[in-house]
Length: 534
Image (tube, rainbow, N blue to C red; front, side, top):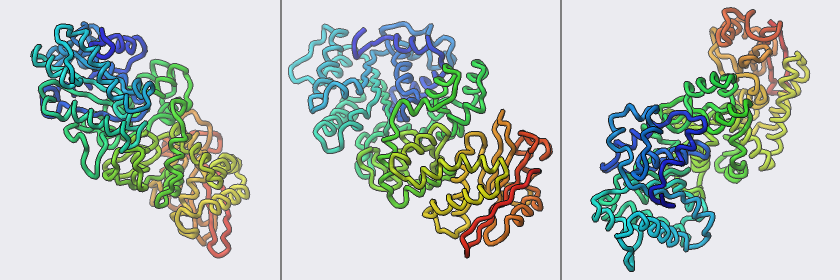
């Protein structure tokens, strides 16, 4: 066993010694690329989404220095036709670039990397000497030719250098030259049966082309056929919840919401595992990084970015064009670039079919709120803090407090659109009731009966609170809003969404449904409220 070659299967064994959700099907996907034009894979996903675990699994499967059959015998990959074909059949070079980034801070990092890997490889091939002038590629090519055997090369945190050093610096350019030399040169196809790189960012693009365009990219924006392996699916989390006696609905509220390719419901795997181990849901993912990163990007406020963040905090979505981003965290030139960075970092989810991004869950929403506060968006932060009191006033039927709370939120957040625009007012309502997301599923413009209710709050499982229907009227009375709720049969439809046959059986206390009418007078700019218990 070496430091960089033939590391064996101890890393994956330690993973299996903990609770493991089977993602071994990834191996079959990679197997199909070996010895083909598509043997170069760059799989990028956000932090704590299982990147290193996948790299250790691939290392254990391919490494010829160990017998890993027993580790995979009960996993999904054992059923695949290619399982026996490639099991423990290759010399595997494994490189974790974050190790070098933490140790070397200047241009010596690339030469040290080459030198150390070559010396380690020579311990496995002592009869094939390193010659003067050899670099790693030259040396591996000579071994491959002498032994008539190709290598698997696995790089974890491939973009660590790109995230540490800006494009154009000596280190960055030297690293790019090293990647080209290793994986885009004349000897590459002779030396490597397959290359698997994983990190946070896709390969750096210059203008519209990738500097390593022979790599097939799998990313948070475009996962191709690997979307199933980017996180936990709903069925996998349900299994974990049942096994550990946890409330699935609570896990869903905190950690679901990522749409990755054709997988419409992906959970943050690290946070789910932390929650089931601790038997408590909180923001585990936030503890692995810093909301400073988000704050640094959103404070740029390109083209109204601040307003988009506010809208997403209120449950909305924003259009984003991810195609022009250069995959460089330092090269951010537009609002679309900022949103795309946040997608790759996991702070936003991406709906590819609609070209939209949104905040996926409560855990990430908390990060965004912290970033807003860090940016001194005081009026926004205050509105979010006041939303708790607004919900409490609503549940208590305090119409004056609700009217004042909505009016204050309206005054403080009018930059979203225009002050008197009805869409703006509905968005303000969503911000005002932001806190309700803790206990409610919040729907904007929910189809109910013969129309669309502006906002409907459906209590989550095990929440002993009434459902709430909120209707906004401009230049009409709050009574008119209540009348519309009743006339268009909103209550009966809301009961169906709440999982009950009638409104009277909606989950919650004895007051099962609250009808909230809000009116806004454009001339006086005053708000009024009426609340009725059904």
